Every structure is written in C-alpha cells, then in structure tokens.
Image 1 (cartoon, helix red, strand yellow):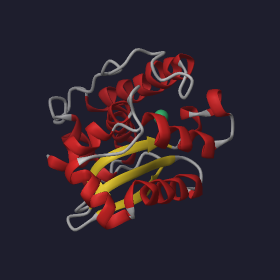
Image 2 (cartoon, helix red, strand yellow):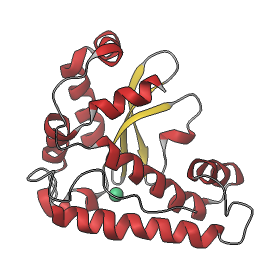
Image 3 (cartoon, protein in one colour):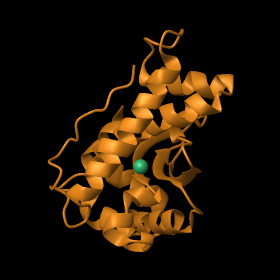
Length: 197
Ligand code: MN
C-alpha cells in the first residue's frame, strides 16, 4: 500500500520559491490522487503488500501502464519532497562535490546542464541527477517515467517539470522555477545520502 508521506518541512517553509498554496495542491491533491489510484489498482491483488519500489518495478515489467503511471508518480513525488529543503541550494561537499567537479564541471557546470535539460524537456516529466555506475549524469524522463526503473541508473535528486509544480508561483516560466530550485531549494544532503547508499 502506498501512503502519502508528510512533507519534510512546513508548508510555507519554501516560500517565496514554492508557496504553501502550491504545496497544498501538489502534495495534498495531486500526490494524494496518485497514491489513491495506485492503491485502488493493487488492492486485493498480489502486489497489495509489496513495497512502493516493488510495485513500480512490477508494473513496468508487466507492461501495466495504468498502474505504472500512478505508482511511479507516487514514488517520484515522495522522492521530490526529499529533494527540496528550506536550507537548500549552495554547494555540495565531500564525495558528491568531487564527482560533480570530475563529471559535470563543478556546481556551476551541473547547474547549467540541469537547467538546459529541465527547460528543454518538452511537456511533462522529471529532471534528474543520477549515477550510472560510472559517472554522474543529468537526464530527464517523460510523464510518470522514473529513473528508478532505468537499468543501471541510481536516482540522486529530482525536480518535477509538470506545470502543476510551478504554475501558481511562476505561471508558464519554467526557467525561473528551475533557477529557484538550483539556487534555493535543492537538497544536497539528500543527494549525497543517495549517492552513498
Ligand atoms: Mn507533481
């Protein structure tokens, strides 16, 4: 069973970069709906007691696109909330910094690549920093698709590119939203924890 995790920060803690009003819809309505629909689809079936990750992987393996869309969106949003922090932005440290320097040209190079990927991504989806087993990479996925089920990719941090993530605060201006994520919200501690896992 999926559940809606509480936000790891107060709803107004990301203002003015992401408003409590955005989060009330994005977490309280959109994420809740993905959780409810995924649960309705697995209720009483063999996946009823599986972990969230297992459900996403099984839906992909079975070609069950309806379940995959809702389960992957539920997983992606839980990962998203942890990718954001009221004390986010700035620069990474430790092993993460070393790899960003080596593979992406430092935090400025990372920000350039991430912004280009996120702004250039057509329509809905997700922008990710991943590790592919050899190096850090910036990639994007369409709609509900998740780096979790891409062979060899370890998701480290994510940004939601669906309009519901930014329309109330930025209207159609995705570049401003991506800038605010990179400068003020990206959670490097969560990113480093995923790299080390
Ligand atoms: Mn979303």
